[in-house]
Figure 1 (cartoon, rainbow, N blue to C red):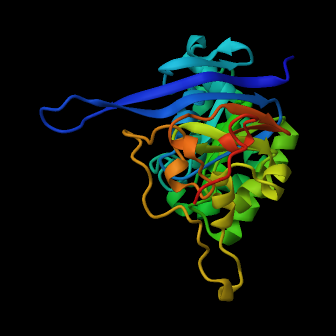
Figure 2 (tube, rainbow, N blue to C red; figure 1 turned 180 degrees about the horizontal axis):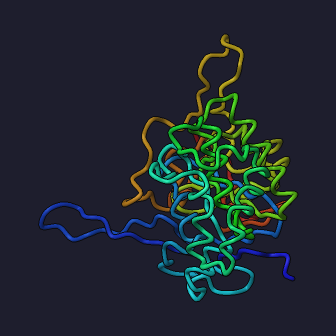
Amino acid sequence: MSEIIVSASDVMRTFMISAGVFRAKRPLHAVNGVTLDIRRGEVLAIVGESGCGKTTLAKLLLGLLPPSGGDIRLDGRPVMTIPRLEMAGLVQPIFQDPYSSLNPRKSVGAIITLPLVVQKDQDPSTWRRRAEEMMALVGLPPRLYNNFPNQLSGGQRQRVAIARALINRPEVVICDEPTSALDVSVQSQILNLLQDLRGELNLTYIIISHNLAVVEHMATRVAVMYLGRIVELAETDQLFKAPKHPYTMALLESVLTPDPSLGIPDTHLGAAYPNPVDPPSGCTFHPRCAQVMAHCSVQAPKRVPVEGGHVECHLFDANLGKEKAIA
């Protein structure tokens, strides 16, 4: 069995965006050449600002969108050649908002057993028992089996969503902001539950999050995305202790501290996010970079291997990184 369960090689996803009446459509490269290997059993977090391509990449990994270029493989098999039902049994999502991801007209039991129905499980007599076993595993009492989502708390609804995702024992679970819609007191319970289930069911997680505290608690590795590219990939401890890319540094500096005297942190990124339809030349981060060099606006950086991952930045290029940064 291969250690690499998901492999993405130079993956692209381009959308054609309308530029207005009587104007030709323009390409938006939502995912722009992502190369990534995800190891079996790990927790990979994908972080970055809104619009950087995180959710599009998740949809590509789920097989919901075909890539415009490149190759995605699940356990060595091209994702787009795997039948839809089989793919659903191997990779499952947990969505951001449990208030909208559950059908309000279906009971908890019907929601959790729906994947068994869709996958045409051969033994319907076992569905309720398996659903109740999964409910117990995620911390839901069996008395809620016939309840409806509007009778549950936010944390209970998210546990239902987790049970639904895991009922067919998938190998990979993609969590898109799994706790952002929940109260802070409930978030830690769900995160600890996900950690426990990972060990019990041998799961591989891909977590999309803006919350760096969640990422630090859950992830084994972190991929930092900016304008469709992974600009830094590193082990979690290494990334939080010694971030390399200037964008990663800015993200970590943006975290609020409990000390009110420190005020709101200044990331020095400015208020304007680049237009993804018309990205900057060279290194796309150079207009916002505090360590920009003369050639950053002209030449795109190469992927440079570093300890535990890679970074795309001229500062780490053996030939181009020796110039002094200009303010």
